[in-house]
Amino acid sequence: MTKHALLSSEAKLWRSLACAKSELRLDLTLACGQSFRWRETAEGHWTGVMGGRVWTLTQTDDALWYYVYKKQDGLEGSERKRKASISPVEENKSKKRLKAVKDEGEPADATVQDCDVEEKLLRGYFQLDVKLGDLYSDWGAADPHFKRIADIFTGVRMLRQEPTECLFSFICTSNNHISRIQGMVERLCEALGSPLCQLDQASYYDFPSLSSLADRTQEGVSWDTMSCSCRRVLKVADCVCLMSLDKAEAVPIDTHVWQIAKRDYQYSAGSGQKSITDKLHRDLGDFFRALWGPYAGWAQSVLFCADLKKFQKFKQSPVKQLKNEEENEDKQPEMFIKSEKMS
Image 1 (spheres, rainbow, N blue to C red):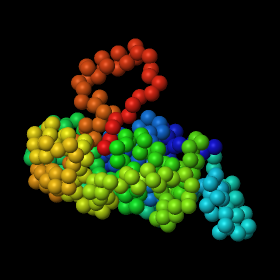
Image 2: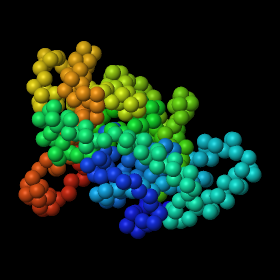
Image 3: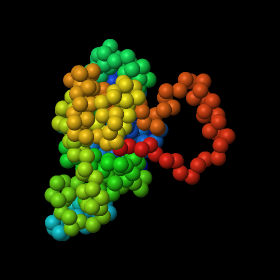
Image 4: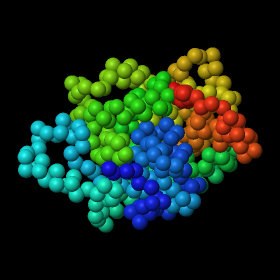
């Protein structure tokens, strides 16, 4: 059975890009609610789907390492979605190709062209042409609060995602927490997307095409739930502009960001309101754009990340963190741990 790749055991099969952790931290960027397709499958190893491929990523102090899995034919669900269009001859060829895939999951004779395409995909996804360290310096000079946060939360980088995936993913975010959104997106991909590969019994699917999403006869998708989640149109639109359309000045505004503005920046406009109006959305976005400049959306993502419950441990001093870890070891493990709330 194909397994998730590990850099320590299969280093010769991996490729790498020069990238310091100050420019990208996978543990923050891939788990802060930008994309919902990534999982930590081993310590420091993140596996997910991007660009029609399944990847495992990890990093060292000065390099981003990546492993791209070969697409497997004949997976469960593929016949259901493609059987009508596959002839017996093509089916036989498909089975032969599947048999040729090695159990250890080695990429099958990746060509130079494949490597170039994959490197370009990865660079584009993480927008590695943008010098994050320079932006952090500019934001810190303009904003003392940001500087204090940035000293702890370095390397939070904005992803550039495929627009359709980004749109439907953020339609799912209204009044949901990150783990539930991940489940909704994965069920959508499993129901309507094409199977890519299976690793350690975990199946990976591509994000569905627009034509598949438009077909309401498909089973396994709660369209009513997704339709009801479309109420916060401005926030969803800003997310797509920021994370897919290179509009770095777009600042998605939700109650979480509003609370940050009131608590850390003494932002008082709309203080008598219970919900975010269109005017408050525009005014608060303009406030952050005036403070942080043309990459305001990127700066906002750093503060959003730093405010998530899962990352509060990074704000503790080493002594306090060690004490908390020792206390936790003495406690019985809880059956369920509530995930942070994400509006």
